[in-house]
Amino acid sequence: MVHLVHYLEGLKSKVVRTIDDHENELIAISDWLKDNPEIGHRERLAAWLLSSYLEKKGFSVERSVAGMETAFAASSTGMGKRPVVALLAEYDALPEVGHGCGHNIIAASTVGAAVAVKEVLPQLEGTISVLGCPAEEDTVEGAGGKAIMVDRGAFDDVDFAMMVHPSAAVTYMKRSSSLSRVGLQVTFVSFPLSPEKSVSKAVVRMSSHIERLNRKTDSGARLKIDELTRGQDYAEMIVKVDAPHVQIATELAKQVASEANKIAEEIGLSAYRRYYMNTYADMIWNAPLSDAFRKNLVRLGEKPTDQLDRPNVGDEGNVSHIVPTICTFVRTIDGSIAGHSREYAEASTLEPAHGGLLVAAKALGMTTLDILADKDLTRKALLEFNKVSPSRSSEISLRTALS
Image (cartoon, rainbow, N blue to C red; front, side, top):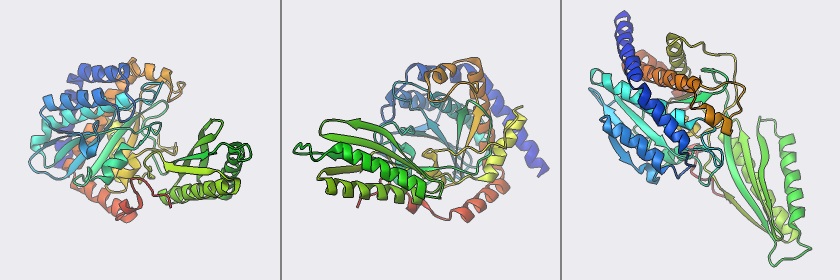
């Protein structure tokens, strides 16, 4: 064990030096993505830039993964194929805001970690894979790139998955809670147009039904009307359903859809219902991997925060249902700047964000080495995963069918 610790320390020191050597390149990638934001499923330049960079660094690259134009996989193998560690890159921006969630930093830190690990990979058993994952933000049609990739087998050969997210407040943040999300569109239509068949009545009744569900549920779920668009002869509602477990969110969404049908029938309208995004599953946190990441942050001089536990929503939850997964946080931006804002995007090009980017890449690379070299760590991670989730992937469908 002592030999392993010294061996890993040597490899980690080399990874840190390699990331420092690539500092200018990684910052340039992050800043370029910030200056050229692309929304989900349209991240053509981002996917090309990142995959081409990895290709030039010697990775084997596959593009248009899982039938998505802007998804990619870049891999490199050491002395043996397993274990396969997937580092998840996000690079979609928010409409009208740009990179107000810092996905430019996620992308740059991910490729930085992968390039650094590749330098020492010939000494290790295993494969490092960068999976380019489109459309994490649920503001676009068909959001949930990782959900699609899970459904279409992109993670079938993956053993462990990791990603780092920038934070405006804390580094690390030990997790025990998360939320799943279902996004539903309900449109009431009056055709032929009739004053008696009021779409406004339908909106009022639908709103009241959602309020009743919020009062009635004791599961920690929350339903909200995220958008409402009215016309003379139609009213469109975007309803988001968040819940601690994907089964609860799915069931509540079905109740909303069923009530929409009932309301429409009683008023004499038509109800058009559909899921506009892929279902985001709740996150299954893996403590052994998370703790290993924390130790590496401490080694880098960070002061991780353990006390704060803030529920998270993201399609990395879908990945966590099929392989041990972590999504941890590195502070990159002043805590006074609100997320999902233009100010947040602008701050991602400042020195604190650049420093956080390098810390994220280093911690991600160092934890990848832990997984590749420390069989005791991987055994513990798999034991915990199998206890919590022997196989829950069947609970997550690409799009839950409306009955």
